Image 1 (tube, rainbow, N blue to C red):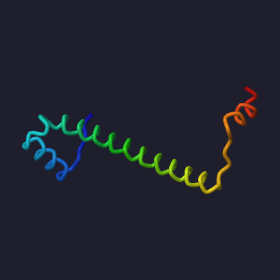
Image 2 (image 1 turned 90 degrees about the horizontal axis):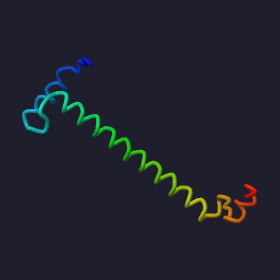
Image 3 (image 1 turned 120 degrees about the vertical axis):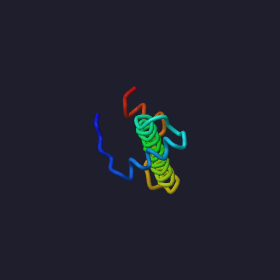
Length: 78
């Protein structure tokens, strides 16, 4: 894969290599992709936690219908 990142990014990559954080350009790009993936995973978890908090608040406020385990079994005819 051949990618042209442009001067600002190439300069940043060179600085990262010079500081010893990576051995070459490929390693810098791989580390960046892994870091980006972790950031996305963390963001997804934050969004899930927020959604759960909203649902719990609605349940506690009586705004959402809840079912007991027995009611669910009856609904599913288990």
